[in-house]
Image (cartoon, rainbow, N blue to C red):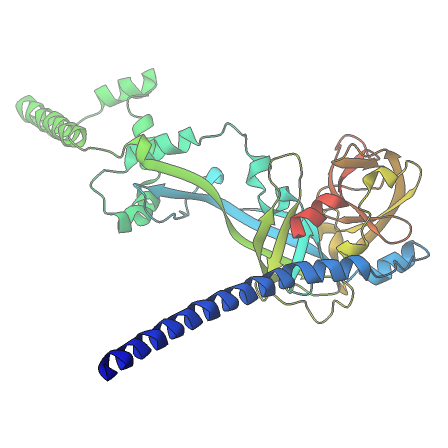
Amino acid sequence: MLGNQTSEEKNNENTLQTNNKARNKKIALIIGILFALGLIIIPRVWAKFNKKEVVCLNNQTQIYEKYKDAVVLVKHTYALQISIKGSEPFQIAVDDSSLGEKTISGTGFFVSEDGKIVTNHHVAEPWKYTESKDEDFSDLKDHIASILPDSIDKKDYKTYLESHWNDYYNEEGEGDYSEEEAIAENNAPVANVDSSSVNSEVNDLITDNKTEEKAITSQITYTNLEDIEILPKTVEISVALHGSKDDWLQCKVFKIADGDEVDVAVLQLTSESLPASVSDIVDLDDAVKDDSSIKPGTNAILIGYPMGLQLANTRRGIKVQVYEGQINKESDGVSVQYNVTSTHGASGSPVFNECGQLIAINYAGYDEAQGYNFGIVAKHAMSLME
């Protein structure tokens, strides 16, 4: 009887412990969920009800002085890379301009303490705008497929292609002789001999050798076109600060807007920290969110690097430039038009209103005439950073 009571007490105690453990897990789970929600919601609520009052700057000079150090010159070098049968992509160094490295310049501006930089999509991925959308690099693939034997080991692709690249042109030229060259070849003496029989034997040997070479070549299986992939890829993205002297800070692509219409991207310094010389970032919380409030006739100030290094280089290092104009046309929800001076290299420049608030990211214009330039309205950069 006593034994039964003891066993029952133990069972009750075990059940109680099990229930307590389950309850503790539920409590811990609820606390965890509430904590996670708090991390997301509380900062947003705090930001909503504790917005900083926008301090309006008085003129173009004050805007320039405040943001000149936050605006950077972007240099992006990219090249075509080759992958065969799923190999690691590689780049080859040959005398072919289509495979050479290309470098473009643009502008960007710091928007966060961890080194994030807003710029254009076409600065972050220039090949999507410079190359034809239908480009499949078929000529290059044909070139590779005609000189690369299928038996070559993956680790030897690069060295083989580099050493045999010009074989393609030699093969293409076979048999393309002028009439004069053909006559000269037929009449040329094969050897310095007197005997016609020896001369005939030498000619037969040469013919046999050529036939044998062609037979061997015809037995080689070359790489299939379907096994060749060619893609443009970044070699290096770096930025230079206002006042620096050929000092380039390495970057990576952080985020790119979806689709082709919104030409905005975010880069980030690989150090993930803001340079010490940058005291004022372009605060997106102060940007003009309602693009319908950007009215024609109001001032627009652009800070950037038109013409890239060509204009930026001075005896005192790299210097950013400032240009002023007016809004010419109302926003269409994606872009706004202004007559601020702009050209290649100024892509990604911040455009401010007369108060110093960001209104747009410069992205396009007409080469034929100045005064017709466009910027992506600031709200798209803001949504990309959320």
